[in-house]
Image 1 (cartoon, helix red, strand yellow):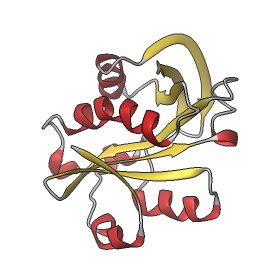
Image 2 (cartoon, helix red, strand yellow; image 1 turned 120 degrees about the vertical axis):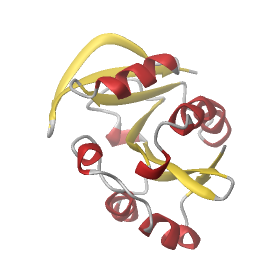
Image 3 (cartoon, rainbow, N blue to C red; image 1 turned 180 degrees about the vertical axis):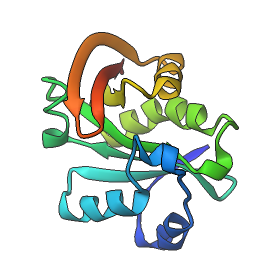
Image 4 (cartoon, helix red, strand yellow; image 1 turned 90 degrees about the horizontal axis):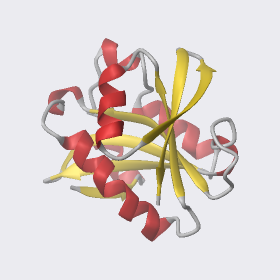
Length: 155
């Protein structure tokens, strides 16, 4: 598993990425996330590649993006996490999440915490995040798509 920052060379790969309607209940599309990142330099789209195939996508969001979820000025927000529907159930989400801490340590050296918000109804994602070392400390927020559980991974 390799993690890469998005660049225009990945455009075609991103356009081929598939999400089901069920997935879209809880996350946004990579195309939409990349558009937002073009308008906000604190958003960093990340591609998780396995043997030159894009299998997982997410955004790391610094500064203002973190504030609704954490008071830690050295935290980074993991958002828009998804796995291409053709690659679900193969362990790629787990692999990308367990690769992420070293990636963050290397590229965002000031960061000491990865924060995420997962929908209360998205029980599969909650189990995955817990399995990968994210901790639910009881914080909740309301989001556009329902109640969110705030989870943290401490670096």
